[in-house]
Amino acid sequence: MPDRDLDVAEMPSLTPVSTMEPVDLVQADGGMPLTGRRARQGKLGVVGWLAVSWLAIVVLLALLAPVLPIDDPNKVTAAIARQPPGTDGHILGGDGLGRDMLSRLIWGARASLLIGTLSVLLGLVLGGLFGLVAGYFRGKPDVVLTGGFDVLLSFPQLVLALTLVTVFASGEGVSASRRMVVLILALGVVSIPVLGRITRANTLTWSQREFVLAARALGAKQREIMFREVLPNVLPAMFSIALLGVAVVIVAEGGLSLLGVGTQLPRPSWGNIIAEGRSELRDAPHIVIEPTVVIFFTVFALNYLGDVVRARFDVRESAL
Image (cartoon, rainbow, N blue to C red; front, side, top):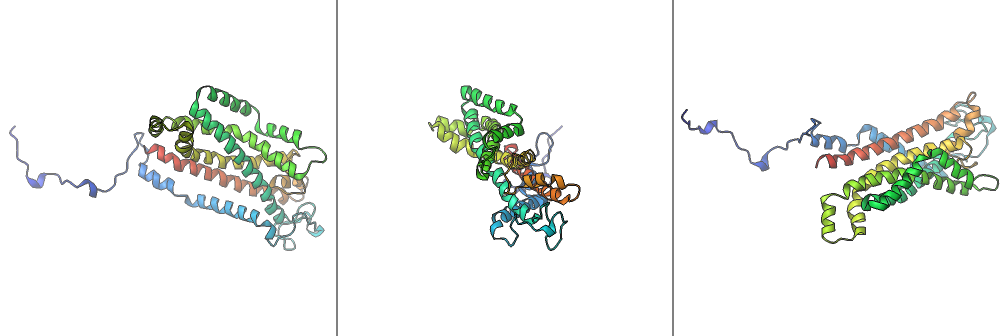
């Protein structure tokens, strides 16, 4: 069949690349476009902002507790003992001894958040360092450190923390400050293997990337590569698990308080408020319900924000 000359009108219009509209890249598995995923995951969302707002309020109240116009958390007022919220101007009522529940919850936030934050910070530093070394050097360091993580993970975390606190901070003559320090150390120890395993797994991946291999080829020192090239890329996963870890530690402190080895009275914490209110559960259920609700929303907010951090930085990997 003879070739036919194409009319200019029939030729497809060619648009310069620089003026073309951006096209969403679709994943091979048929998932949603990558740019669409970036837009969705880059936004915090309504629930995310509510979580941030809740945590900001809790932290702010805990920090400003000494200057807030609230009662002393250990002040006893017999008239509000076991009374429901709203009695005599006490917004959340009184506990079994007549202490203001609002004041005790605010002061309890100081102890619970302090234990949760410092314990996970300890686990983040030590577990992160051990995991970074194990994942980067591999070989014998990996075998030894991973074996240590496995040994610690083989113990139930609550039982391990209970044992450490019972041995080092129980009995007569133990001060509230010593109990607090031992609690932080015990819960920090049980956080090390979890954060260490997460850091190791991410380090194994990032230590084989092209920019790391290029740094090695250029003669960079191992320490510089670990802390300047690998660590910044591993930090998002570490922070994601750290937020979840704070939530776990807050719940664990409550469990230890129920077992009698939590934050030492008279210093209030969310855990020992629940522990004290168990005997009043039938006549004054608000004593247990109020701190339980506060713990629920705090743990939910931390878990949600941890997932947001993980999802936000997963996008970078999926877009490569």
